[in-house]
Structure formats: C-alpha cells, structure tokens
Image (cartoon, rainbow, N blue to C red; front, side, top):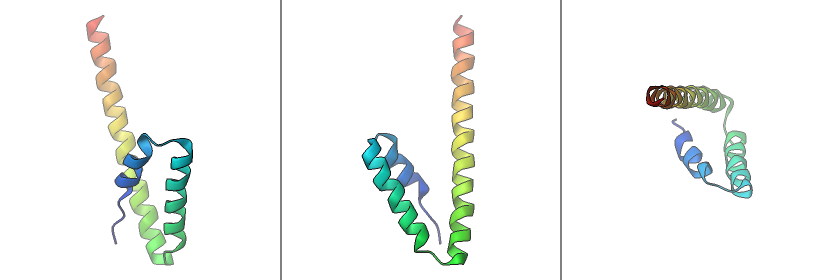
Length: 72
C-alpha cells in the first residue's frame, strides 16, 4: 500500500484554515480506517515524506541564502 502524502500537501499549501482543517480530518479518517499493519506503513511513509520535504526546504533555503550573500 502506498499513500500519496504529496497530494494532501499540495492541496494544503494555498488552503484556508478551514480547508486545511478538512484536509487534516481526511487524513485522520483515513488513518483511523487502517489496520494496525497499514497504520505502521502509513507512519513510515509519512516520516519518509516529511524528512524529504524538510531536506528540500533546507536545500532551497541554503541556495537562496548563498545567492543573497553573493549579491552583497
């Protein structure tokens, strides 16, 4: 089983607080519907997704910071 966390993430980027609450509830409902085995898979895939996203943000931040320092 593979979970598409990126689609939830993309939907939430420009969502209002109310829309984001609905998206979060969808994820909670999905999680609640899973078996114990699938919950473990869900958690592992979510952790992997979050680590990758944080790494991407860190790389983008470093690149922007480097460009700003080079322009000064």
